[in-house]
Amino acid sequence: MNCFYLDDRTEFFSLLSLKLNDETFFTQATVDVVCDPVRLAECDVLIVGVSRDNGSQFEQQIAKLEKAALNPEGIPVIAFLHESDRDLIHRVIVSGAYDCFVQTGSMEELRIVLRRAMQFHALVREAESLRKSVKYFPDFGCFFGKDPRMVEVLRFATKVAATDASILITGETGTGKELLARAIHLASPRAQQPFLAVACSAFPESLIEAELFGSDKGAFTGAVTSRRGRFEVVGRGTLFLDEVGELSPALQVKLLRVLQERTFERLGSNQSRTLEARVLCATNRDLKELTSAGTFRSDLYYRLHTIHIEMPNLRDRRDDVVLLAHLFLQEYARRHNRPARRFNPQALCALKRHFWPGNVRELQHAIEHATIVCDGSDIRLDHLPTEVVRSDSSEGPDSTSFDFEVRAFKRQLIQRKLEENHHNKVRAARSLMISRSSLHRLIEELGVGESQGERRIRCIRGANRL
Image 1 (cartoon, helix red, strand yellow):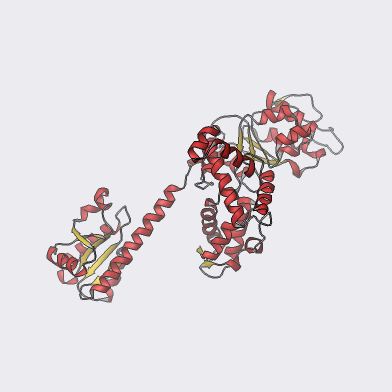
Image 2: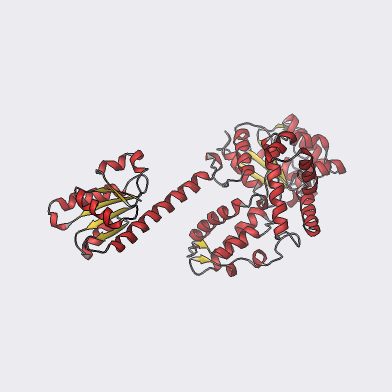
């Protein structure tokens, strides 16, 4: 432990070092050390001597302590007091000291004070390291995570946000497709314009066309006035069409024309209007499968698929579960004015083991539930929703078993190596230090590259065979 002391008593601290005899080093420094990041990097604890016996120098010592406490590295400051005085202790603590030690105390007490201060500094550095490890994109502040797939999604979204291109966002329910669409809008030149979201599955087929395109007076029974549709209302903003895979074939034809020609007509009108908005689409269905089945137009699929972003599932980025859980805990504790501040180990284990079929949205609701019902500082297992803590909380009977977790890890590792090597299987096999034939066998066995539903079924069956 390296302690910098801002004091003139060199002999006193040399004697302390001999008495402690536990690899604690005392180095003399001036108050200017707080402006030297290189020297501060070598320091674990700052020590400032304070004594009322020094008369006029007392306030100078307090000022020195206050300046030391404001050091940019957050290094804790220990006040060395000549006497045990309650008012003096209160003064140094208020001035920013982490702790204090009276010089008449024992060496064991000093060891404890210094050790606590050093551990505190280690925790501060660890927290800062974790904060820096989380990839943050200035225009996508609502997304957090360090999983490589999520980082790549945000990097790509940052790139395409500045354009006017239409984007197709796919992913399971609850992965944050609309949230990403809003973030893309806010990161685009259209950020000051409106953002409108339309859930295509929320309207009957007879109404969704009028909702999107608008209608003229007399276009249909009940149309007593002209009405603007969402394409018109949004102006130069961004229109987000959620669940675009639910559109009828007739509407798919009209949407394709709107995206290609950038014009549209209200129902009952022959007047063409120019589309000025940017269109973002999303779906939780496999449009390629729908195209093969003939329920989704192939020309519209390829038009939408020009810029494609797939949101990763939460269960495939387990490292982000705990990070997101703590972020949600802070948010809901503040919003609902609750005392919960952390999770106990059992609760964290349950969060990491759960399959999260509802993805981030399910995690969000689970943490809000736990925060509200918790009356103490720690969230326990019994505060979490029952579907999170019960043993069969996953989609499959063995999806929380050891074998299932091992298979999931292998699949994620192979997928990542393939992506890192641009799907060159020879290079991916070399980086994994296995033969190419072994890589092919694992890809087939683990279902790498299959749809989420196909992979889930394959993993469950494979775990059952083991």
